[in-house]
Image: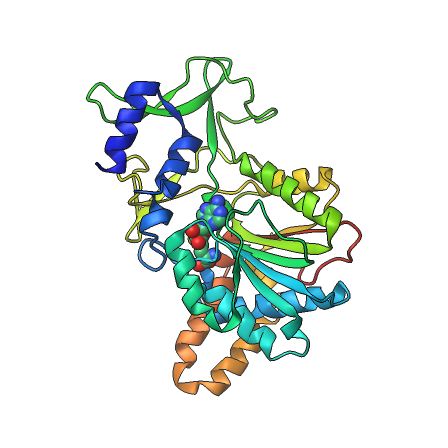
Length: 346
Ligand code: SAH
């Protein structure tokens, strides 16, 4: 049985699924889910740390700087959520390792995918990372947390405005018995308030995330930096997209086989964090953030040390910062324990 068959049987028996439940099954079903069984970084999509080592190196130095600005508490943790193949953390640690004091930071990875966890174990074997499992547990030491392209795979509920009321979008079956989008008959009681548009999307886990950080910051100081794509000043509409081998495909066509992603509502994340009393810096554009951390100087140093790779190094960094590529579309937000000074780069 494929995940598609499983989902059809599930819907047949129990009725349509909210889009968030569909997304969750597609990504995390233990037997057939995309991340659980066949994650495809580098095949279905490509991420910043896989494009240029400069990304992780700059973030490593940022993390070190922020840890020092907290008074260099020891022991402390460098935490990554959704670390993919481990490239970013490996680059971060290489950069941190050269600086004094970096040894006091231990490494913890929060990873949902057993396949990625195994890749991370190998990529980071020299650093003996802890594996924290789901992001609900951040441990009890001061921490600097970083997550790149993790927020966009947190499942989203979708709502559409009918004649007058909001209805939740669901995945059901059409007359031929194939997966098809529909609308829940009942009006949605928890649709996004104030959303003026015809479609709206909410990632419930953003609330959980802010709660987890708030709880953690009641016990220890720390910061959490998130990098992803999404709007700052409006609620995302219908942004669910699927990718397979670099091509965008129908999100219902290949459940568990294609990657699924949504835009992150950075405005909402900032508001939730602000309301919870956390320090909020950003969101700012990735290009500006990386330039202010010294992307240009780091690129020049790399080129000087590797003149035969000059073009590839330059091209990689350009893709990260160029407003026409990832520089503007990707945003960076930093949520901090109350009372810490403003973080670097904002
Ligand atoms: N940060 C990496 C990988 C991005 S892909 C990079 O930039 O290359 C998304 C990552 O988040 C994968 O490692 C995936 O397994 C992980 N992930 C998805 N949902 C998760 C969850 N709920 N908890 C922890 N990790 C999750």
